Length: 219
Image 1: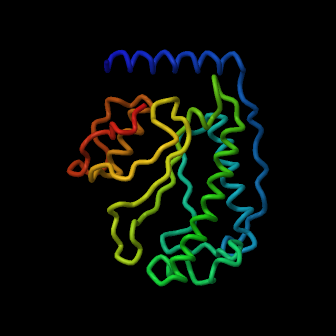
Image 2: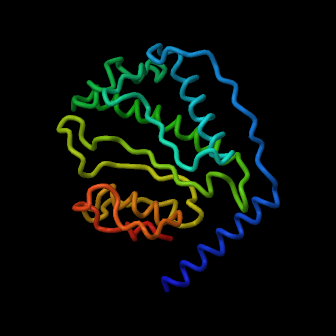
């Protein structure tokens, strides 16, 4: 029942807090800030990305924040991506996203593979932090999203996204949903808020496109 499910979540949360207190506070040493780097210099992309992820994980570990957003480049895809390798033609990320020729599609595959590798680094960092009965990753939700589904047409319908992390057992893991019945990212955001205890929130963003939390995700 709904009440039983809520009680189990509260019990698990209290147990996790108890274990965190038993472990003592995490090591919260300040991060040494590197010299400012030019993000438009392709040779700095790996170092800047790694530093931003490490800084984010440190802030989460030390409970300086519980929510973080990291944007890879700007809306025009201005990140220099020459570190990708030989599979990348060299045209801009923005340009490749608007074209459908085989070279541009290959570029987008290479770009997303590159970004996926960076995401994997973030997840590894989070999984290395002990927290309660698991790790920081076990008790977190990480979303990898894109601002568009189809760059050529500037449409949003069917935009793929990746969810990672255990979310303290709130969501199903290890699977994929091909169709969620025309639901929006608003409903995903609402489900995420409910998963972390904000069950009194009834809408997220535009009310007219919020139907309710995505029940398909719930464990």
